[in-house]
Length: 366
Ligand code: GLV
Ligand code: MN
Ligand code: MN
Image (cartoon, rainbow, N blue to C red; front, side, top):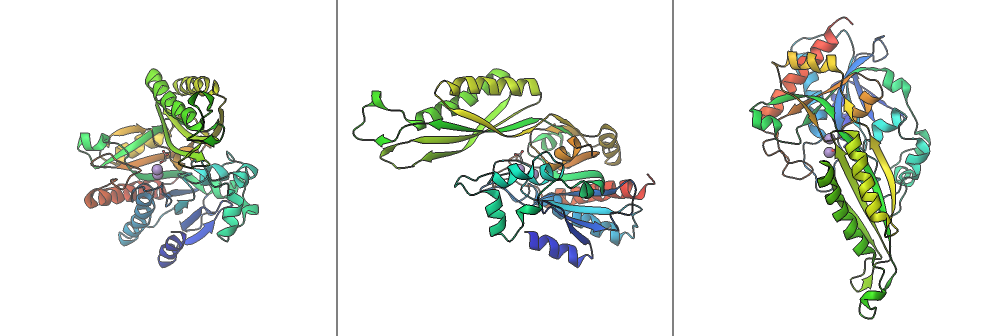
C-alpha cells in the first residue's frame, strides 16, 4: 500500500515526505513556503481484519483525485496542498488506534509504541525492524505538524445518516469519546475430563462474564461497548484455560457516560481477579466550528453530523490543528466489514466536494 501510494504521488510529481512515524505526506507546492501552513487531506490505507474497501482508502484516493481535478481545472494554489497516508489508524495489531497521528502529536510516546505487543507477543519495534523500518526514529514531529495549517479528512460514512437524508455528502462536526482497554483474566490450567466443576478456575468463564458486563454497562449508561477480540491460553479443546485476554472498545457521546461504563465493567470483572489496562483514550472531540460551517456552506448546506468512529482528523484537532471531515454516503451504513460500500457516483461527489473545499482553503489569502 505504501509503495502504491508513493508511486501515485511520483506519477503526479508530488513531493513525498515521511515523518518520524512513517506517515507519508505528499505535497503539491513547497510545504514550508506558507507561514500559515498548507491544506492537507488524506486518511489511512490500513484496515481491520476482514474489513471493507472504503474506510481509509476512500479518503486517500479522493485526495489524489481532487488534486487531479484542480489541476485539470487550471487551479493554482496559493498555499500548498498535501495528501497524507497515515499509518496504523485502526490499531488492529498493536491495540492503539490512530498510532500514526498519536505519535507525531506526542500523545503516544516512542517508548510505549516500541514496547506495544501484538496478540502473539511480538513488539512493535520488532515488527517495524522486520518490515525494514527504524523504530529508533519514532517520536513527536512538530515540523511535520507545522506544515498542516488545516486538515480535511474525507471518509465513507459509517452509519446511515446520509442515506436517510438522501444526501451524497455530509460534514463531520465531531467525534465521540473513545477508549480501548485490555482485560487480562486469570485462570488455572487443568484437564477438561478429570477436573470437577467446583475445582475449576476457568479463564474463559471470566472472559464470558467480561463480555456480558460490557453489554450490561453500555445498556445502563446509554453508551457502546464491544469485545471484538479475545485470546485464550493455551487454547486446547480439552484443557481448561489458564488465562484469557479480552479487548474492550467503548464509546460515548459524552466522557462522563464513558467513564461510568468503564467503572461498572471494572467493578464486575475485578471481582474475579481480572486486570484492566488502558490501551488508548481519545477525549470527546469537536472539530473547528468555523471550518465546519465554512464546509457546510461551500457544500450546498450539507448536513453536519458527529460520529462514533475514530479518525486521525480527531487526533490532529485535539493537537490544535483546525480540522473537519467530509462524509460520503454509505447505503447500508455497514463498516469494518466487506459489506461496506459507497456508490461510484457518490464517491465522485465526494471528490467534487473535496476539490471545492481544497480550492477554497488553498486559494484564499490567509
Ligand atoms: C476506527 O475506525 C475506529 O473508530 O475504530
Ligand atoms: Mn475504521
Ligand atoms: Mn477510517
